Image (cartoon, rainbow, N blue to C red; front, side, top):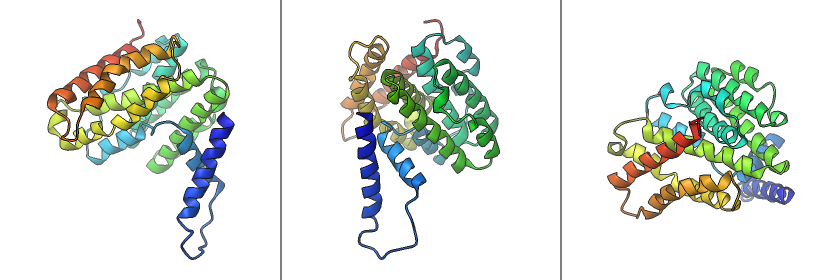
Amino acid sequence: MNKILHLAAFAVALAATSCTTCNQQPTEEVLTKQDVDKNVREFVYPLPTAFQVTDMLNRIEAAYIIDICNDQANAERYLTESKRALNLGIYSADLCYASTYNQQANVMEYTEVIKKLIDELDMTKAVDPELPSKLEGNENNKDESTQLISEAFYDCYDYLNKNDRSPVAIMVVAGSWIEGLYIATHISEYTFDNKEMVKIIMTQKEPLDKLMDLLAKYPGNSNVEPLRTSLEPLHAIYNSIDESGISEEQSNNIKVIISAIRKNIVDYNN
């Protein structure tokens, strides 16, 4: 099935690129292998990475608040596969947040935490061992750092799926999405008063729809099913938002629910 998806993705990526030039005169531009690989990965990867949210926060000049992220010391205390997978996603979003805001010291710290969890999840082969040094070498190049981290996301997701560990892959994706929304809803005490912040929260409806569809593919899975159940109230709120826009009550409820979901994930005592 994965081979079919990759072939389909390759065809879509190639066709999309070709269509942009089919009615134009030939140019010197050549579609490189790197371009194709990037398009295929972004097509197959189920949700936008957390960079989407953190970049929007950066563009509206929201503050960078390191204390909002998961404490790096907690990584030592996650002992089960599900906790490690979900918090790998959490820390991945925190890495995106730090990278987007050019917080290089935090980027390197989260890279080390993520490497530890990847090792414990037996995913070492999925990630370039030189990633930390490459990030350090590009500490002043945000675009290159973003590309390196995104490549690592795609590689991990692809590796888990190819090794029959799709539920783990979905938990990593879910953790990353949850942390992105958590950061967006908790970066300010006055979220609803900021129209741009509200727009960012509203854009997460479609990714949540996709995430719920992905989680529904594993009914009865002892790790995935509780996660899907915990997200159902949040999904219900998003589905209740009509064309007139989000109400303050809905916004506050999203904030409360995502906080409770995230707290349960990062808490190492349960």
